[in-house]
Image (cartoon, rainbow, N blue to C red):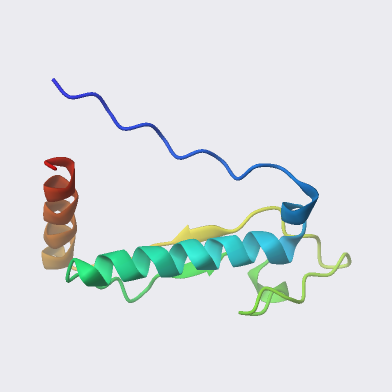
Length: 100
């Protein structure tokens, strides 16, 4: 029986990552890295996006969070929905990666 891979570590807490813009940038970088990896595997998730609890106060470049609107506490990579064939392709890519 194979053991599960370790979960990814959280981003280290530092003053550099205390700003909302840094959190959004980190999530956008993660989204882009995942999109690149999926594209290399022949998979596209067109609805991938970055979401924050106050998404309307943060522009795409990560700027614009204000104290009045509330500081961005976290940003999440939203994978969206996909068709059944894309879900199967994703499952196959993950399974093939585990077999290495």
